Amino acid sequence: ITKSNQIHMNKKCALIKSLLKGDIINVSNSIKLTGYSNPAREIPREVEKPFGCVVSRVKMEGRDQFGNYVTWYDYRFNPRIDKNAKATKKMKEYLEKETNR
Image (cartoon, rainbow, N blue to C red; front, side, top):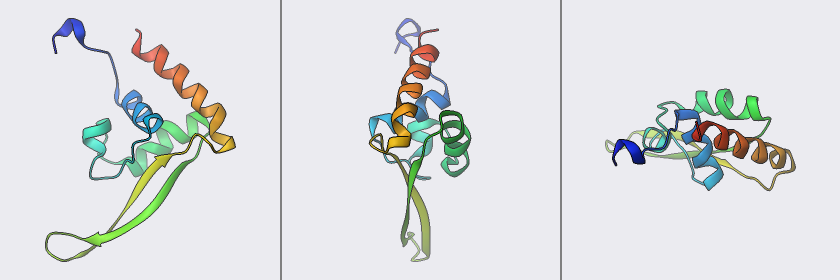
């Protein structure tokens, strides 16, 4: 991508865009999708509190490459929840404002 074709997008915008798109975010894919290394900290701070929404959390369990027991959370935004309807609009407005600077 050349500089003239780049879209200005900060980490918060990338996080919001991924959630609105329906991506499932977890500690394994968060850096690639959003640039944040700790979605457990950033989702409440950057999305839930400012926009007044709820991001669903599902506790996952598995084993790592060495056979050790591990847990993590998958985060997903559900726009169909009543509380999230207004938040969806606010998030889209925020993205529009921030990416068109």
